[in-house]
Amino acid sequence: MIRADLHLHTNRSDGVMSPELLCHECIQNGLTYIAVTDHDTMAGSDSLVSMAPPVVVIPAVEMSMEDMPGLHLLAYGTAQGNMLREKLSYLASMREERAKEMIRKLSVLGMKLSYRDLAYKRKLEGGQDSTIGRPHIARALVRAGYCKSMQEAFAKYIGNNKPAYVPSVRMAIRDAIPLVNASGFIPVLAHPRELHLEEQVLQGFLDRLCDLGLRGLEVYHPSASSYGYESLRHMAEERHLLVTGGSDFHQENDGKHGKIGCMMQVWEKCTEDMSQFQAELLKMEQTMSIAESEVRSRG
Ligand SMILES: [Zn+2]
Ligand SMILES: [Zn+2]
Image 1 (cartoon, protein in one colour):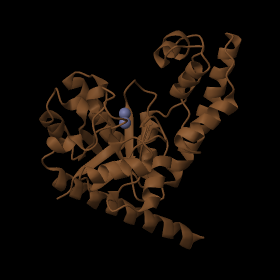
Image 2 (image 1 turned 180 degrees about the vertical axis):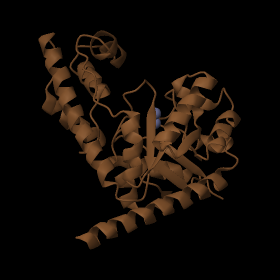
Image 3 (image 1 turned 30 degrees about the vertical axis):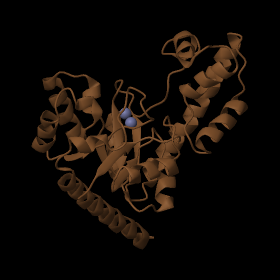
């Protein structure tokens, strides 16, 4: 029997646990098949894979799309994924620039933060390759005494359209799905219910994503609980999409995300779904290695 959680965050993005601790907790929860899907970085996933823990680990990432809020694309794969990795590191360098620009705007407003201190602190929290984002700046504003809370930092300065806000650089879904496929990864739409679309609109949107090459739908996510999971499962099956699921765990009781392994309470066909998923991963891996050896033989 497979017990899966394919949506987990670590301190390499905005979760709090190290990949090591998270993995330990997953094993304690009886999971056998897991993926770390940090935002826009594979650092957490890579360090979990390199630990070779006694569970199946699928390399993965969750990317935010520019098209609309809440539109996140999950990518899973065992291939090298070089094109995807190059794009992620380009986006990471753009995030560094964005953080510097926000710090510059804050200094104009009389708040002095040092980018070096921020980068150092971030490394302590999440390691060299963790992503830098607005939560890091919000925490720095609190530490420096300019704000009483992170909420205040967002509400006054760095929230959307506030005086020190700088928009982020993201991929469009029409580019991201083909890129994920071409990298030998499986593109899966994350938490479709977080898009808050009417049923008909969601169906039409899914059709468009399928035309772009979408391969899976995250049916079992806490955000779908109030709708029931059957409607999403049906949408996936109608379109021959793989069915995945995960808790979106970030930290204990943050009120917004699930607990590690929580989807196992409702995901009855987990073993079947994950067997299909695994078969698809294998197929991708083989296709990629054939393509790579053809490139090599052409010299
Ligand atoms: Zn998400
Ligand atoms: Zn997530």
